[in-house]
Length: 81
Image (cartoon, rainbow, N blue to C red; front, side, top):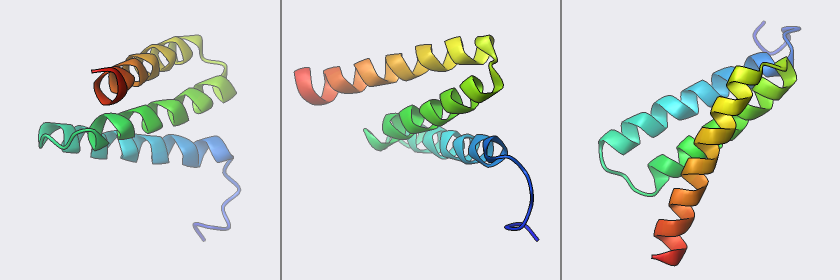
């Protein structure tokens, strides 16, 4: 029944992204670096895709900003520092 549902792809993407962000939060709180921020970036990018499908500008701006902050921070710590 679950796999034969006629729900649009954004329904599944939003829940996958939400699950990834919850796991990222747990990993960050336990000090797992860099996997926590990497998962934040992945979850944020998936939510950005969903936001674009929905054409919801508040979510688009929020997720572009958060994904950019994560990407810049990871780039700096992993490659430039």
